[in-house]
Length: 599
Image (cartoon, rainbow, N blue to C red; front, top):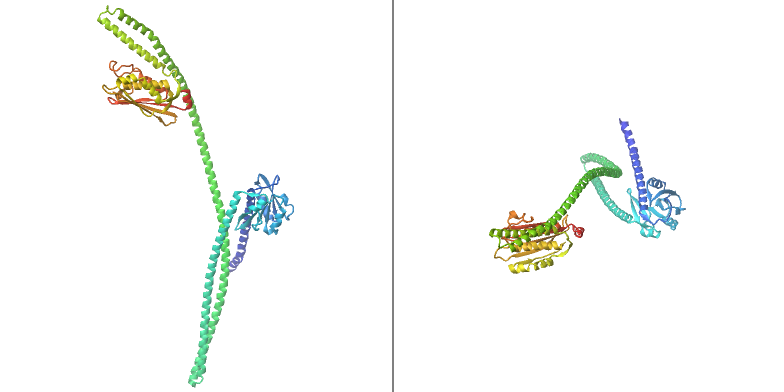
């Protein structure tokens, strides 16, 4: 068991040394690989190469390891769209063939010699561990990372210019260098504090040794005093001499004890010194182990960061793929649904177009029928009216009272029938020759009010115009609309009350369906309309009063509703019986094309 433990203790240093060498080898490989990546990244961020080689040639001055790393890193890369060749050179001859030259200070060449050789060859120089001033681009290795220094003036002298990202990375490297210097300074201060504490402990130990030496000297002094006393006691009596002899033996014993204690103190001092040296060696060994552990932790941290980053990238890629699949599935379903909706919409549009054509044809036929009927009915009605007038003029005296009364009824019925036929003819003609134009509604209403001068003078009516906008519409039809509304407001007035009519309009905001919109209100103080009749008054020939009470045919509001239909609007009334009425209507068009074509 004893030999096995000794064997293990013998092998431990070798195992530790092998691990250190392996870690150092891996570290060197990582640094070399990172150096190659830095060189190629810097090459991509510099412009000004003048060589017309088909391949981008990188020269390495006397460093096989770096040349091998560059060669491995250039297999799947291109610079300025060119494949990369890596060549190793041992001297400063034939540097004109290189687009980029890498030189390390350990190669033994002065940077001024290198710059002199490439002065007329348009070759970019990337140096390592040289001074900043004469270099173009210099990199420095610091704890497995590189600091980039870019000499813009030197590069411009040789026809090169760095990118903004390269300059930013150079500035960032300088900041990292300062931060590392600050951290190193803090560590140095901490180590200085530890050293001061150790020096204090050493001083205390020395002080203890010094105290022990003083104690031993005091004992020596006591011995000397005892010796003096012994000499004085020689002159005493024999009894005293015997006592002195006994005392002297005791002193010798004390001297022996003192010498033994002194030897023990010296041995302890030697042990303290040897232990101190062992402690110093152990502290140094622990520091080296701490450094190695710290390096291993940093390597493990970097590897863990790379693994976590790779895992995050994998999860992100998986999430992105799932999102793309969901989006494609949603797009496919939406596309199918849109196709079905478009197909249904096309079918419905086709059906609506067919129904619209049928409805248009039926409306045209109905208007044609109304026009023909109105026109053809006038002739027999005119015949009946003529014969009734003839009978009244020539045979009035020959008829009895009943016959006279019947002839009067026939004439009045023919007159009413003639008025209805003319009204029906006018209703069928509304909008037949309409023309869309820009209308100043204020001027339009002033012209209409002039036509009511006789009625206004007779009734004392007041027509008050508010704010009136400029609109787009059909001038003749809108004139007829305002004329019917004003006429009804004056006609259906209260007895012994002056009719007052307020008219105003405004522009409305656009909607999804209509871009141009206006609204008008015509308010009166007349007899009003009961709520149950408010939806019926726009029907053709609808009357709410007897003919002897208020004259008219009941077709005026039907005209208004038809005119508003041409303007894509709506007309309605708000009224209370005995209070008055407010007729409101809207005018709206979809767009300029709608207005131009008059759809």
